[in-house]
Image 1 (cartoon, rainbow, N blue to C red):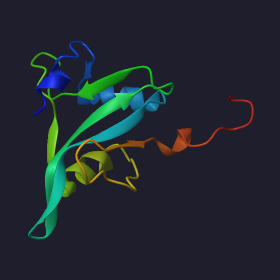
Image 2 (image 1 turned 30 degrees about the vertical axis):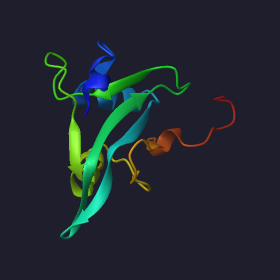
Image 3 (image 1 turned 180 degrees about the vertical axis):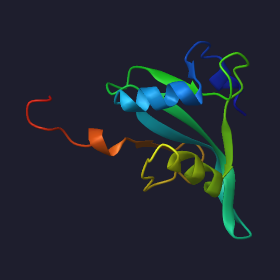
Length: 117
């Protein structure tokens, strides 16, 4: 399911690098790879995360290790929200359908302040 993502080669980032990119103003982009379905008391599906540059030109896929290029996949909404909690990202929307993407940004970069444009 994530094989086409691996074709991006060096456009990957580990968790440590992901945090640094967020601090530099990159967006966290959640991509739904498999539509969500309710399972017991949570929703399951398949989501991956990308770090996207502010201009949208650079996308880096979150991997478990830059050496292995294994894409970090999230199988439940709880896992996804738990991951973002460690970066203090306020997730307001999770894409529920395959192919849908949602971008999230650290609060200090939301909106533009006068003189910082």
